[in-house]
Amino acid sequence: MLSFTAKRVYNQLEKYPTFRDYIGQIYAAFASKGNKRKISGQNNIISHKLCILNNVTFDIIGDNNTVIIDKYTVLNNVHFHLAGNGHKVHIGESCKVTQSATIWIEDDNCSLYIGDKTFIIHAGIALTELNSKIHIGANCIFSYDIDIRCGDSHSIIDLETKKRINYAQDINIQDHIWVGAHVCILKGVTIGADSIVAAGSVVTKSADSNVVIAGNPAKVVRTGVTWEKDRIYDSE
Image (tube, rainbow, N blue to C red; front, side, top):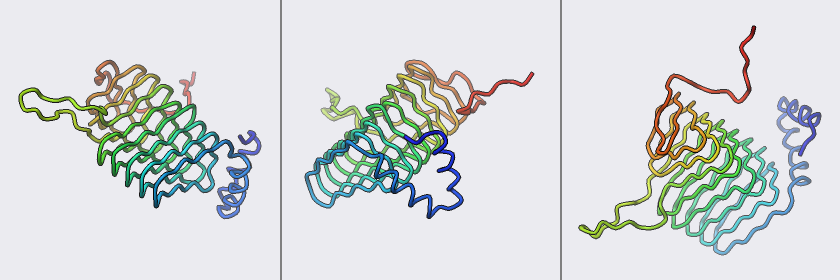
């Protein structure tokens, strides 16, 4: 990783984007290492210009799958498993995903989007049913041991109707969400912008913006709040 001084210099280059991209390309090529690709199928695209990837595995089985990682994003120890056709993964600019994160996608035509400047530590993100979608907004922070899944992977059958009753439902995590450690976010959930999910929560129902949700199952425990990543102290 860049030293503190080097980071300051690199950030100053924002005033000169073309030169910054040139320097970033050189550094990304130098810093990236230990990556693996195991691809079986046709028309699969992996794009990650100006990114730093360390120990990242792309395991793709199928056709017409796309993984796009925007510039200045850093991935450490991330495993992409895409089985099926027509899946789309898009990770925005200046994100960081680290510490044994797994993106696991099955069936066909699933979509995962992660917005700019989102930070994820040790998460499992799973889309395991046809046409499933998970949207994670910009400027989010996810702590460690996070599980996000929009389906149950297996079928629950109603004995009377003989029909399945647990189909997948999309997840929408909006901008600027702080998710504490050991949280599970399940299918059909929308979490409104500027909200906080307390550690250990199991989120099964949607929540509005500017709230704290906590518990198992999680419920709103406070409203009218937002959060900042910096520790702020009241002035004396």
